Length: 218
Length: 398
Image 1 (cartoon, each protein chain N blue to C red):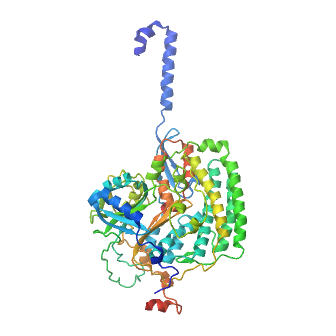
Image 2: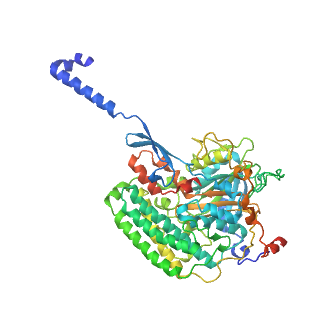
């Protein structure tokens, strides 16, 4: 194992009373729609709400003090079938494990939405996730709750192909109108890496000598 | 010609009748002429007021904007996708280019997020130097804004002063990191190198110069009657609207929100070791946004001065493995960048590169308010409002 100047166990508190209290309040306000939750003491907190209650949950969270809209984005939990784009295009493509494995607070679908809200008085932030139904890829828009979500939803729409019901104007922000495919999905290949081998692979190869060997041993 | 048959006009003489008809016709013609048809004005993509390639489509009624919408994407480089095929140390050279005027500040939140996932903390000396370089990039960034502000309003002099004095700061950044614009100096676990000899004394001299620059700008520009009349009461953003749109940085503080991530958030940086004031303004107009930025620049020079006096001794790099593999997990770190809150949501799968990085850039949120804000303003005010919101195109499109 590697020696570090300070180990995280010494610095981070084991219990986070502030966030535990906030989470209890959130669960009391939202009720059963909170599917899962996680508090990392001294760091951050996550909740996952059911897809159908997405818009309603946002309204309730806003009313209980999470009034600052930080960002909205999506995560595609399917590992890329192209790996890290380091395959040699002249060789046959290797088989990769593309089993979907969700992150914190779990999940049942390939895509998840992620919104970060902050309480402007206590400065406690919360990451709210929700599942995006497979195949349909449609959720309710929250642009009527947080006006700033408008552009973020447009971005998620063109990059991940997620539809937002009730969004006023889901035009493309970045891509040309006739662009096909959703670039941020993991199964959308990075074309620059498809046409010729990635030369940068040398950068991450272990250096001769040094502590590379000990790293491999651990 | 019903008018000729009605009893009132029948009493008038022919001459009076004719003049009455003529005046009516003239009125009608005037009305037709003034009935301006809706016009669509295209500003940009290449326009001095757009700091890059932003295009604004405004539908006008006379001089008034009925509807305006920025059109982004002229500089979209797909950094979020590219990070997925890079290793963690390689990502910093990409994200340097997001806000190119304050590049070092872009690297810091990403490195902090990676360190958080790895459970590594930079040694104190590295934290202090990081904070100093962070504030220097803020000064370099915002001083250019202060100069550029004059150009938007037709004052040419301030921009020369801004370029002159920003160069001192860039020289400092260059002598410490080797790069004027893209330092790529921050490493997981610390910094690439220690400060060069004599750098601290030189920085103190430059900070004095920059404070003079702030004073000059304050008297030249902010005291100017034309500047005030062009910015006061223009583009007012109320507090709750600012919160809904996720405005951050000086734009949020100019709407009266006393919130600065440097003060209000725990981070392994040295801001909690120094005294500084968080400036706010209750008005929320263009003037307030510019004024808050001016005060922040002056405050940043004082932060740097305080930090220079107390840099602890020791190494600038923690012990980290040569091949960096970040343990599985998710982390969110944001810092108070020159343009506002910049944060990275990093998802790692225990690999040498990130699984997903969401880049939350300040300008994207700051500029998303423009369709709301530009409605009903006059055409010349579009320029001052956009200038006062202060965005960098690379920071919108990423």
